[in-house]
Image (tube, rainbow, N blue to C red; front, side):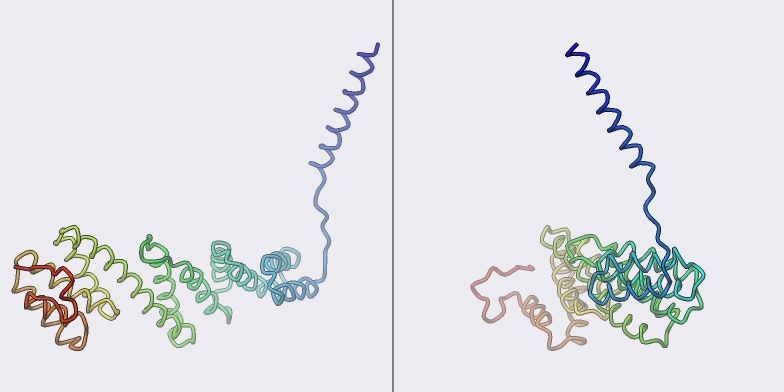
Length: 266
């Protein structure tokens, strides 16, 4: 009898747990409809206090509860901005794409394109890593310039494009130096030529010309090396890289570096 009594207690407890779980599963979250101004102002206050995640949720709630109000359009863009501020770039990009598709004539659409470009731009990694994000950033910045050439966003985009090109050129230089050190001279030349031809406005060009001079000399093509060094001297006469190329042709160390190993080209 004791065993049966215990079994009944266990069975009753199990049924109670199952009933509670069923109620929990079937229970829907409480939905409280609020005035649009209340939701929007709450979101703005949260953003002002730098609670960006919570602000984005409230801006999304504006559109969910009041999809046809004038506030809904504003809330879409503000939600994207809140995602951006909280470094949730993927969510921000999705929200911005939706905004530009739904409201192509909106007065803030230029800012939406610019903010999308910033989402990519701020994810650019160091030159030792994959440059996919750099390329996406470049595409988005060019889109801003193409669509809104006279806007303040286009002016800033041009500055960021210069920095982006410099970043891509830096990646090419890093790979080229590696090939040069490994004595894969043709592969190195291809990388350095890319910098000179494709990223000619960047800060890496003087070094690229000097490295080309090194690689041509190492391959036993002094004529190409001399032409490259001449271009370097003509365009960057005061550059330390031109000085390096000069002493490279002289086949002797630069003054002050006599104690360092020197690369013999002949």
